[in-house]
Amino acid sequence: MPRLLSLALISLTACAGATAVHAAPDDESFYRRAASCVAVLEHDARALADRHKAGERGLKPGLVRLTEQGFAFIGKAYLRGLRKDEADRLVDEAKAAQRDMAPEALAQLSSACQAEGARLYAGANGLERALVTNRAKARVDKLLAKKGA
Image (cartoon, rainbow, N blue to C red; front, side):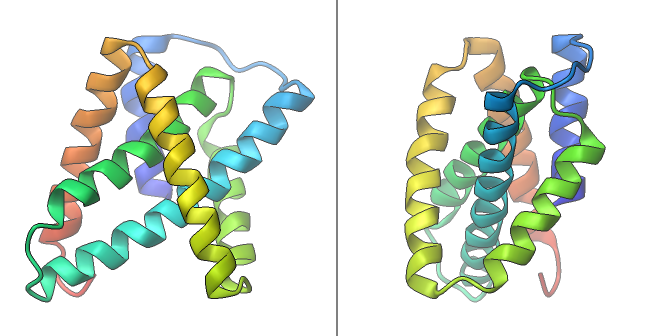
């Protein structure tokens, strides 16, 4: 995930030019939610990629959509002031917490994050959506090209 976050943040930095600021309490809450969603969506994306590699075709559009949803969270968090080191730390914490979650709870989190990510993506402007889609497609191509991933 750190590489995923880095790619998204580099792309957004080129367009946003925003400087880091101290986060408001509602931003901190959003950052934690975004990290949790990025972690669960990445988990789902890896599972879809594994199924694709095992021969189940027709999954790539769903994989791109999941990845777009994750990048939508990353982009929104970035625009609200979150930066790479803190983002990586929050995602690592979210992954650790999700390891202990029951499968049903993880599935509910994933479903909620997919819906929220879709809303974030839909609410982005055209340039933001283009950046997110571009990065998502590149990430999916890389994910599908990996051996044993």
